Image: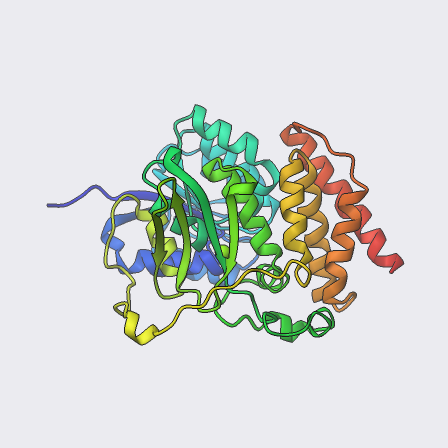
Length: 379
Ligand code: MG
């Protein structure tokens, strides 16, 4: 029996998650029809994707980009047009940065389900986004391996006592605080388990990535921060777990491949063999280790909990100042240890707005970025 093809658009199709999503779709191409692709400035790859996948719409940031037979759209307006198109059954938001927020809101307003791989959407505007999704009956299915794991474990959120988010610990898990804080860009970019974009790899080295994930988990699953625990698990086999009221713990396990959570999110609630390359074997893995995170060595994790608890614009400020500091580190302007110092200082000086509007969120984001760059110059 032939099932109806799922109509999908990918915002950020040329990035790390986007390209892997297209690998998944290629494997199970009879399950999907691609409505739109958007690829920012990487026009070479976007062109190749257009040839291969023949979307109806393509969106680029390059005004000269054109592709015969495919309606070409541009910039943020183009993204919003794709996300307003009700032909879509689901939209994979795979861009990184604040550019993901407005298209996501557009899709939600149009009742289109979201496979969410963009962290900023929930970190910057989690309250608004989750409220709108509820009002519009929209499913938000997380792509991030940890939230995807929790999504797979939960049957009834009311019976859950605690979320347990695993962290690989990054490249500095067994290095001293001093070694970590003075690490080179190359050392910080050599993540032991996951192959990801540069910004998120640096965030994984400082554990800010885990902090952002705690904030996302709070919004996605409506859990209090005190009921979200982070545990370091270097093998990255247990992708996260939940503890039910009665003490039962359910975890989701698998080999560390982003293909699995991406495929889960875009095919939910169905499952296919898809891109699976290898069957899971406990005996081959042999051991799984767990340890408490070192909040002294990784103060960004504590900062993220604190800002999450304050809520409102506090997480907007933290996210923007951290991102600017990460860019400065990647440019060789500051040390890895400075990222925390800068983010901490910026959040301390921030006047929190309790329930910011989307416009206020973008204003605060802009302001914080300007001030963070000034602070970096003064260092
Ligand atoms: Mg993750």
